[in-house]
Length: 99
Image (cartoon, rainbow, N blue to C red):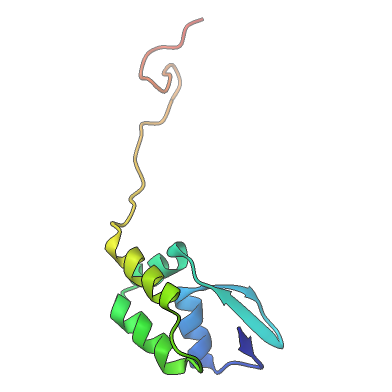
């Protein structure tokens, strides 16, 4: 949670690695495997994410967040699977549909 209006740099940092849930007088960002993956895919390293967040934290860096960043970085990036489209005269299995 960030009380008040956060500086632009902090907003950019948090938006890159977390999902903003609320904005206003107190803004809330939630870190998730998906949001951390987004930051990693954008070119940030796990060490850079941790260092940047540690640099703006007013409390000690939360160990669960450190684990989330490191665990997400270790997991292979999931890739979409391609499958042939079912066109006219073809079923998903590649055979002609029965009539």
